[in-house]
Image 1 (cartoon, rainbow, N blue to C red):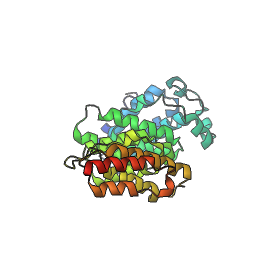
Image 2 (image 1 turned 45 degrees about the vertical axis):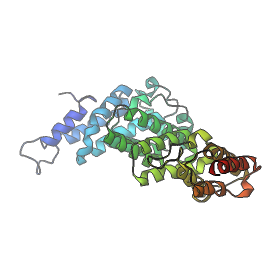
Image 3 (image 1 turned 180 degrees about the vertical axis):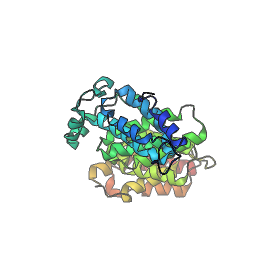
Image 4 (image 1 turned 135 degrees about the horizontal axis):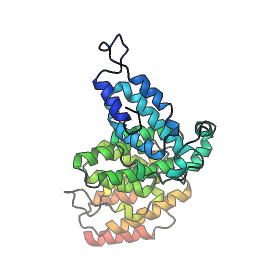
Length: 325
């Protein structure tokens, strides 16, 4: 049988189950060793088309359970990432390599060139949605090791998460969310969309993910609090709490913003957060279920120096006191 990218996975599986991967002394008498032939076939991987590479990767996902074949999966993943990182790759057509110079161009490209190229290259997002969650983890970590633009990786992760959760069972959604959270934590915070993080948080909350998972997302949102808008803070209160909005969630984010990171807190950043918090106060002040100690925590969480004006603060206090009297 001729070896092709489309039957590579089948041959690997057959070699594993028929014990055709051992030296003559280790395997059954007269059994040929297919593994060297498979590895030799992979020497020509740089000449595969993009479609052939994707097909091989899709079919070889099952090799995760065969320890002896993980290096074959590694070679396919590495080649895919090299092509995406190669300068001038803007479509599947330009990503298919039939030139012997392909490896040379990848090897001599600087990390900055890869970053600049990847920053606008999102055409491949739909092509990799077939990845199972364990292979997604491997692909993303490989991308990071190749110094891929973190903004592109971040956008792909959220796109993958949204797609993988459509019509999925509860357990699958939870697994996808957990892995995506852990992978996003590997990225530079400034490369992550605040909107995407809030959406991820909403998904995690609705799925009743563990407190540790929620904490991880909040640790990413907190430092970006000055980039968000009031709409994202108006998260419905957990069932049984009574309040309209989740006040504890907002207080945790503000605490992380002030004390949870090594980033610089400039006066402009402080004022943006202060304005947003005052808007939040005005939103929650009319809530008859908001407890006095919670309202007090909201009005005292910011230092006075962060506010340019106290007008919104006084308005919120007036609204709350009128309801309480």
